[in-house]
Structures are given as C-alpha cells and as structure tokens.
Image (tube, rainbow, N blue to C red; front, side, top):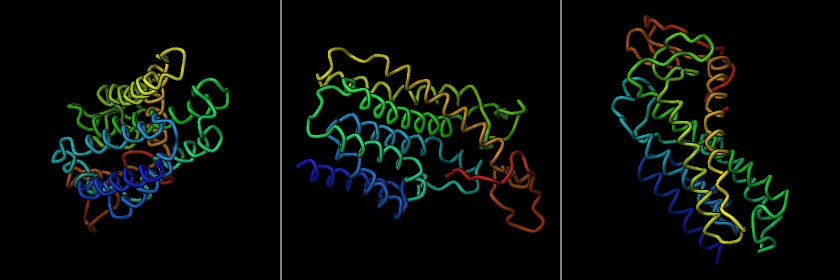
Length: 260
C-alpha cells in the first residue's frame, strides 16, 4: 500500500511540476523517481520535507517573474528545472531517506531519535533540505532586493543575480527558508507521537543550516563560478550572444556551474 501511495503521489508531483512549467520533461521524470524513493520511507517527515522544498521553491521561482526576466537572459517561465537540477538538489536526500528506511523501517523504532545512527541520518536529511531550501529562498527572493547586492568576498556592489552576491533580503530569506523546513519537521515528528517530547531544537538547527548553507554557496559562487554581465542588455549572461556585445566579468573563475 505504501508503494502504491508513493507511486500515485510521485506521479502527481512530476505531473504537477510539468504542467505548471516548474519542471522540464526530464525534470518531471526525475521528480517522480526522487518522490518514489523518498515516499517509501515509513516516517511521514521524510516526504513532507521534500514536498515543502518542492512547493515553496516552485512558488518562489514564479515570484516577480517579469522582473527576474529582465535580470537574467536564461530565465525560463516557472523555472523549468531539468533532471540534472532535480537530482543535484534531491538525490542525496533520497539516498538518505532510503538508507534510513532500509535500516530502521517496518516499525523497528518508535522515535527517530531513540537510536544514535537514526538520529544522525535524520539530521543529515534535515540539514540537506534546510540548506537547499534556504539557498533557493535566498536566490529567488534576494534577487528582488531594491539595492544591488554586495559580493561576499570583496563587499563591492554587483548586479542582481551575480554568483556570490548577498543582500539583507537574501540572507533573511535563507534563514526563513531553513526555518520552514525545521517547523515542518518539528510539527510532523511531534504529531507522530512516538517521541516523549516535542523536538523544538529542530527549528534553530534547520534555520542555521539554511543560513550557513547559503553563505557557503555564496562564497563558492564568488570564487569558482564565473559571472558575466552584458553592459548592452544590463543582464547576467552565460556567454556573448553577438560579436560586438560588451561583456564584463564580474567575478569568479569558470570552474563550476550552479548544478555542481
């Protein structure tokens, strides 16, 4: 029954994302596989954290879409994440959920925190999605900051959308993105009734994971990702589109991309 439920819900997840243009065709297939692997876990908190990340991220991608189009030449309606992007964000979480189910499934424990290894696996899972959610919220909300962000390595102002750019709005968004994951975990585990108390500390742990993860991502973005800016179109670009286009390197070396 659990496998059937996971199949139906995962199909909805992929289909919904495809119809809403938040996922490409390959992204929808990847979302189905990620959902199926995660939802097979006995504990409701595992799929709930995945769903929180997916639905909040999809919603925020569409926030002020017209303005985002003016800042990034490769912005797509709804985001249209590919399979590569889906797996980069969710593969580790899926593997952790599957590992936990293999080790502690079939009601072998009554509380996630009664076994030290179960605790470590869940905290890894919580930290993974808190970091992903915090970084997504920071990217999608922070780019809308009224003032230009500053580059985290030099503290100089840079165009919105620059890899490694941070702003007060973006940092606050990363903190709240992580806390959203923590709140869902706190409520879900508390309502399960298996533990002898409500694990309130999950909220600050997830909040800090969201903020710290976003800061680490910003440092990497400012140093090992090249950001190009077209002074003609006033947009972040990924390559020169015309011979005469005036392209300026804002920051970073061309070693990694957003998926790495």
